[in-house]
Image (cartoon, rainbow, N blue to C red; front, side):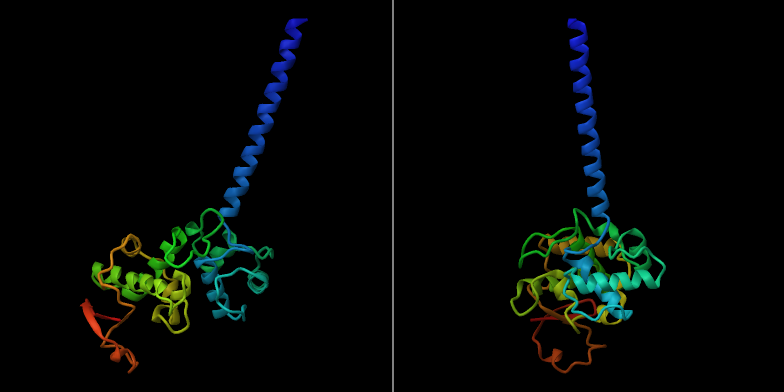
Length: 237
């Protein structure tokens, strides 16, 4: 009798452990699926990227604000329907591939909008590297770090948006956004430069503007006091 009771207890315990393991596995799989997608309620650089592309292609007429709300959701569905994708309003693997967006930089359910000067995730590192790659290809390494530093200096300055994505996608702020070079895949050097700037290296000593005098067309930018030249860029305050 005692043996039967012991076997029954063991059986119940094994069943409980198996059920717990299955629930945990299901939860982890769900988390991984969510991490590899951009969807309603998310904020940050990846959402900016989705909105910018959809607006460029005529699917989205809202503000490029980095907030995945109703307008972004509907625009994604229109894009999916037009391109023969599953129409669910979620930028998953197939939709992201069709848009040319790398989901690898999205982790933990997305990049949330940080406070001014606050902590940043890998999504911000990747977006900053994209801006560096688009703006400073061909510049010396220190020049790439300098461009990233200018963007971060603007994030800290109350005259500019308080997020990396907000600064980069501020209308007319950067040529790489206007001409689409922001969408190029950053190389390892650009990623390293972004991380170095995020870790505190500022070769510009606080500059919030830079320009190439051989290409600059704005008379206003020439009025800014230049305090350092790195590569082809003049850095100003």
